[in-house]
Structures are given as structure tokens and as C-alpha cells.
Image 1: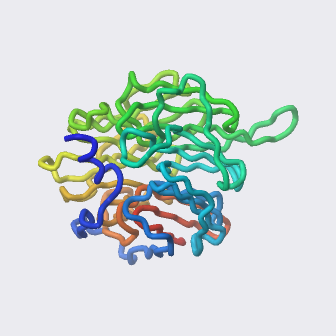
Image 2: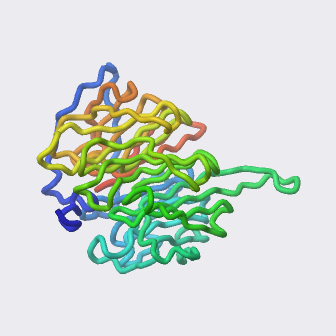
Image 3: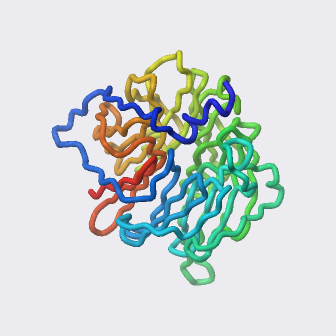
Length: 365
């Protein structure tokens, strides 16, 4: 199996691959399933990878054609704010309405990608972008996940916000983390090649404690799903979880609290076990256990998002799934195909969730 043959699972989802599935353990909660609203967006041929909101009304999403869209009315309308063919927008992270970062998947993996810069920065809300220069990072090819941790601290008697930023990738390798502790002004590269073959997502709780969703090898035929943990800002890493099966990786994660988190485990062994799984931690990522999702050998799971420790969603290639009991039971839910990212936004009036895949959906709670 070569990388081109894996593109349907790891990247774009064709219409022919999206045959519906209804196989799931039914949820025990008597309340009706949540009603996600499909938003009006420009049609796209496959899976779109990331969406980011700094508040319920203001957000951005991008796609593999290098198009970046912005909304100021909670997704009711979108405008194209930037377009660069050859850039594959894989990950987004914004500090505020002006300052943000864009992860490009990079060359030599997907077709028609010519942008060799893994990370770009904007200071004008996405209208213009410049490459982020990191000394010694010339071998880093692409980014699949961006994590922005808002840190407030007192400097010379003033309370200031200095975000900690991690940008990690990529699918197919090589694995690396770009790290900034001063809001993106200076960076260093963390070489993850001694620990894994690829990185798909990254999450830090503070300056020292963090996790990456990974795969043990860049050769998927030999790869186990892998969750790596650091307690010293990325200087050292330990395996917090490794699957026992080949053809697997850890794709995306969601932490509704400091203790409880969930991550999707992708399986690409077509002749293997049809059971699809996620993993769950209740001790902040130190240990993980596998949780059954659905028995369906045609399904690939992508994004995951939880509004609290028990209520959340997993995006699949053919449909989404909802749990209200921490993953003990699941039910199909219409939230779009191939949802790669679920973003949860809390505000004074409630909680809003956004899901991006082939389309963009919104849920107001």
C-alpha cells in the first residue's frame, strides 16, 4: 500500500466513498438527537480540515485549495479573505481577531501542493500571510495541528497575555513540533523522529505538560496508533498509549476538562477487525483505554469534540456519532460527512459547536 492509495482515508473524501452507515449502539438518553445546522459555504470536492473561532460570531476555515474564509455572523455568511493555490490549509489557530497561524500540509504527500513553508502567520485577520521562520527547521515539511494556549501573567506590574503556541505534523512524516512561548515571536523546533513516525494533533495544558496524537511509523502498514506525553515542555516523551494493531494512528483529540479527554483511532486494515474505536483518559493523558464506537469496517473516524466530560461527538467518513454518557453508548447523528475538526465555543448565552468536513455545520446548545 502506497501513500497515494491512502489519500481517500487520510485526505480528500470522494462522494463514492461516502455510503451511509447506520450501525451504532443506540444511545440510552431519551432526549432526541441534537440538530446540527448545515451552513451555506462554497462547495468543495472532499474533506476540509480545520475551522477556528475566537468567539461565537468570528471565525475562519480553510481547505486544500488554499482558500481561507472568514465569518462575522456565526457562519451564516462567509467571505474569501485569502487564496493561494498550492497551499493546503491543514490547521488553523488564532490568538485574536488579528493574529493567527496557518499550517500547510506541505509537499511530497498530496498532489498539487507546491507550498514548501509549513507554517504561516497573519497580523491582519487573515488578509495576508508570511512564512514563520524557525532556525534549524528546514527538514520540517508540514503541519497537521495547531494548539494555542492563552497564558496570562504579571510582567513588571502589568497583567499581560502571552500565548504558548505549538504547531505539529505531519501525516506521513517527518514528525516535528514548532514551539513558541512568546506568542509566536520566537520559535524552536522539537525533533520527534526518535519517538514516532508521524504526528496528527497536539495539545498542551500549560508550558510543561502536553500530548501528541501520533503513529509509531511513517509506514502505515507497520504503524500502531500512539499517544505521547511530555511533562517538561517537550524535552522528553513517554508512550501513554500504543495500539496492538498495525495500520493505525491517533488522529485528533478533545479535552473537555483537565482530567478527561478523548482521541480518535484510525484503522486502515481493510481485511482486519471491523470494530472502530476511540480512546479515553480520565487522568489527564497519563493512561488511556480503548472505547468501542461502532462495528463498521468501511468507516473512518476523524474529528472529536466534547462539550463536557460525557457529551460529545465523533466525525466519521459517512456520518457522525453522539454520546451523552462518556462513550458507553453512541448514536448516529447528522453533522456532515468526514468531519475532521469539532470546535467548542463557550459564551455568556451558552455553548456553540462547529464541525468541518465536506461541509460546515453549527450546533447551538
